[in-house]
Figure 1 (tube, one colour):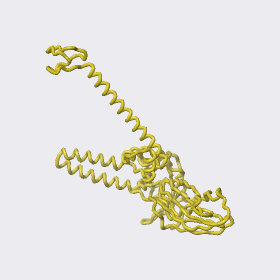
Figure 2: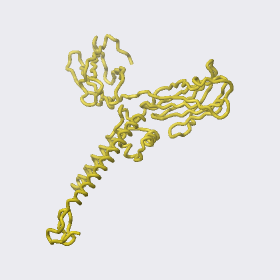
Figure 3: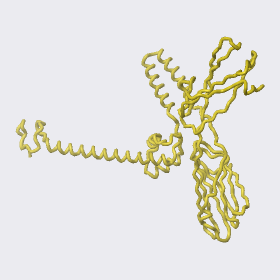
Figure 4: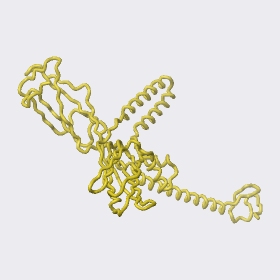
Length: 374
């Protein structure tokens, strides 16, 4: 547990990666750190003892492509000051997973007069457009001191009421400050805060419609085991293909094709979305085929964050409806071409009812049997 003095070690940082060949960060060339321990003299590391080296890493603005970054280590040491140098590589290279988390939310507020004097319904919308869930979300509002809140509720995903929300009020110089604490707001989830206020006297409509802000704690990281699941499923498929190849050649070919299809499906990145947002966009653009539109929308993750926002669904709907229009035009053109070809065929040919010989459309008699056309 004794810490070495600064005169017993030195570190050098050079540009570029020298050991790892495959799992690198796409954000730059990386670095290689060289540590020399025992610069002043031998450290005398006895058998069974360990030397622990620790340092911090920083990833400024990482891109989502950092799925896996490996950091192997290589050791050079000797048992004597001028003895032979031994070289060993670490048996396992530690993998570093960089979480790409961006905060993004939208919010708005509207006050609506209700029946009766001095009664208003206030609606506050808060939507988490970020890359991960948010915890400890506080939504604030301020109402005039001569008004009081009568009833309130918050609806979350699917329009269900949230029962895990706490509300508190505080008297301030600006009025009554209301705070709602929401434990977790999921990625893509929208909160609808609705409450009624009642009071006497005049009220500033502009101030009543002003949004007073929200703040939240850290993002919630979720473990992504998709890579491990892909590896396990791939191994199972490969074992099945080997067993079937021993039984018959035809069966092995079929199993190989199935394994390739399954592997291709597993390697497709999962893109998340909100069902209600997609359905609203479909209704707005008159789209009825949900599955076809969803498959089409998977190509419109414009910011490559694995989540389809409403704006991206709108772009997908525009392209989807444009393709339908083009297909209808092409079908009508084909139908008109077929009709014109049939008309031209009718005009160019006249079949004899006796012998079936084809004659010109203006022929008076059949060229084969001399039947007179009526």
